[in-house]
Length: 432
Ligand SMILES: *Cc1c(COP(=O)(O)O)cnc(C)c1O
Image (cartoon, rainbow, N blue to C red):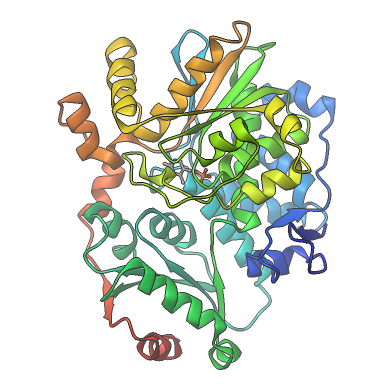
């Protein structure tokens, strides 16, 4: 399978080149040349399969041309080392809990798959691959944990000193092994500049194999399609299923749209936004107008220029009418999100995190228009990741799961660094 750029200015790339590059040279996003349609036999037997079995069949349809079955099996089974339960919250309303991975957020799925894919495609190379990632918090932890212990690859996480939360910092500074945390005297923008300069440094790249694990990498968004098949199969048989996705960069929704294109009978999608409602505005006006993001309590969705919009446009041939027939949108202010978290907890006992709350409410509103359908919303993070906000909303002291506590009690290991490129360069050259 070849992968083309959504900007169409460069020739299609192999899987290996597309994954190692991340972004195409014309700044477009890679898309598979063919989206395979799965057989009716596959769908008929889906509900009898495990999550890993379902994921492997979907992965084989997408990557089977390029990767041997046994390698693909290792990749999928290794990435999906945790459950993704579907939990009934109320009549016709189900939560697909994507937060049971190592960092307790759904990005674990994409990051763990990407790590194993990168290891596979670089396995015959003598040099170690170094993944550089600048983070303001959550990306660093998903990527670092995704690559933890993966042979042949080191991860260097750059983060601004004093500007990430303690719990976030602990999730990438306590790991050790092949993960190195660099604490930069500066801002997130400084961290990003250092990483960009390193990629552009020809001399450095001649001596070291550097790559990124950016959220636009195709091997991060495609594996997110797996759990749409799984979630659908767990629903009462014969249901008309609507799926609601709390969205920021729209990689997650894009994966769902791909699953539908592969034949998964999802009746409709709902995109839930916080106050950053650029996509909703597009649905309403047919105009895409990116604007600076505003900070909200559902901060992983604070995106003013959703990067996967280009992929969604590509999938629908930029046809607004066709796209609107498949996707509806809603947006919520912080006070509304707080009200939803409180109300759903009081009425059902189910604790939503601020991102899941947007999705749950958007789905509830949509289902008022379609009384025959049943809905799944994606719950993308464990509420304890937002403990201060949650405690305040619920007037409680919510428990921190063992998994998160373990990070916080680990020993911090990080390298201090100035924000000068020369220092970062020297550091990279000294790495083995
Ligand atoms: C990243 C993230 C999102 C948004 O996902 P996209 O694929 O960028 O739309 C939603 N919720 C949480 C908790 C996230 O970390």
